[in-house]
Amino acid sequence: MRPGYIDTGGGSAPIAQTTKSYPEGPYGEADPEVGQRIEDLKFDGFVSPVDGTLANQRKVQTLSFGELRNSGKRYAIVHVSAYWCDSCSASALDLSDKAKTVLERDGVIIELLVDGSAAGADPTFKELDNWIVTGGLEVTTVAPGDERVREVFPTREYAYIIELETMEVVWRHFGLYERPTTVWYSVDALLSLYLE
Image: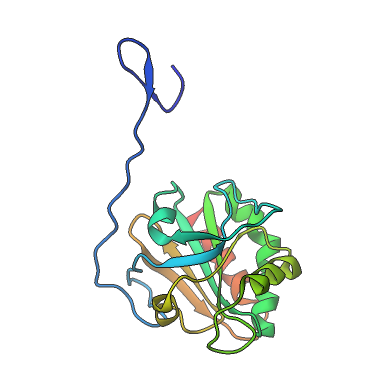
């Protein structure tokens, strides 16, 4: 019998995929703290397949935390960036260097651009594309799907580790213009504490 199939007595049929209900609130607000749950936010941008590679022919898709939670992955890093921020750009370069290891260990990375070329302005899809090309990113790179994303994640250069089963922040770090970068710290924490 093929994996993912069930014996029906007269052959086999695919096992129905179950969708987990999203954890209830209360949810964390601006720059959520460790222990706070994250609501089911929506993003628009370039979404990597489950294997983690970003397709060469990028098309805009919508992604929600609920979909990510049902992906079978265990933890996600969310790095909050702004297109105009040099510190964020340096972190994105670290992201491209470390992404493969995270993906191999069943983690997910989301690069979230909350600002485009000006503070408070959503990034355009051209800016998202430029961010991917410049940083050599092969991870999901998205913009806010609605204003609520900007309310929950208003500050650039925060990195969060979110446990996808509970949707709770288990680790966070803020590090504007620091070396090593915010992303370096987040990947190190994810690999040493959660995806050993």
